[in-house]
Image (cartoon, rainbow, N blue to C red; front, side):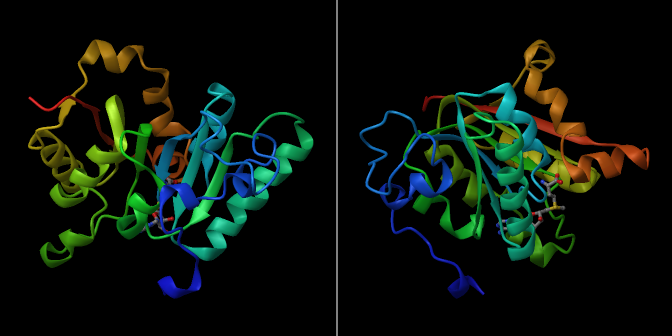
Length: 222
Ligand code: SAM
């Protein structure tokens, strides 16, 4: 249950020195005095494949995975540590935290902090009564719109057609998000990673499954 993991009482209480020791050497090194903040969040990151790819593609951007399962989170921690050891000065910008993202996003990120959020192959929760457990919902999109800056992007992908339609329609119906054009999707190198960088994506590809992508930008209030 949630009582087994600590939750920072506000984004100012997130200990950056635990996650990014090379950038923040001591616990007292106040993340506020450094302009650097976490900018990318991979929600339900699983085994962390996307983050590992993004870490070298965006070496100066701090990024974090949020994962509910304890053992999976520990695995990702070990994976990042091993990569840091075998590649000095790389992977210092990537970390993971065990948390329930449906409850604690505002504890980790302040208003307009994030430039990218990822929801890759989230759990489908098929039954109608369980739709409220989906990580994309009208209610949670309000929260995501709060922590994503104007121009920031939400990336979603799934192999479950019904969930893909649900995520797309939630985003389309939200006043603070607009879909990227085909040209913009084509030009964004991150879009290409959605299908192939995560462990779940690779599984779907191996099985020749179809995927459904929705990528939306946070826009200004009209
Ligand atoms: N994104 C990864 C990928 O594409 O390989 C993992 C996909 S997996 C199907 C969904 C993940 O979301 C699981 O690892 C699960 O533990 C995690 N998850 C589910 N609900 C969550 C929540 N409320 N907060 C954080 N993670 C959650």
